[in-house]
Image (cartoon, rainbow, N blue to C red):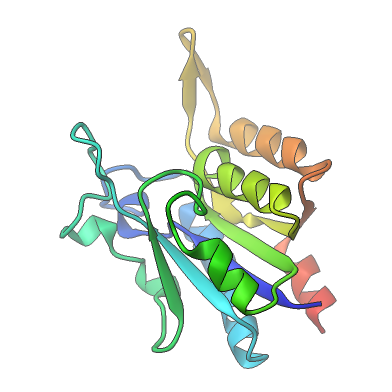
Length: 183
């Protein structure tokens, strides 16, 4: 099994002081950091995904701002790949699929932000490309959403998307469960 860790959009704008702070992002990033350290220790491949907003009406992840930078908790080390994207799906108009094929990757471990947007879109695409997907649910974060005047709490948004991805798209685990399985 050739496994690659993909960290999606863990960027400053999602953290305290950013333009779109997410619920529970600090804990999600701490768990993502544990995964990152384990992958580094085992010399397993890591890909960081960085979103750059290009829509004229965009309010976050604006190029050449502090908010667009990958957060220091999971910042890439020299030699780690950073894929820059402009859409929720990390595969769309990027070289992510080619990078995974070059490494003969058959399994992707995915974490990051937002659970209901870029994480979801990327996992579904990875599955469609024939990759085995492992979602690390406590290394992901999201925010409250509003639909038809009703606020859906971030915890409910996250749980609904993890439940939807769990069959058939991904095996959904906690960071601890994944780390025990990597041993």
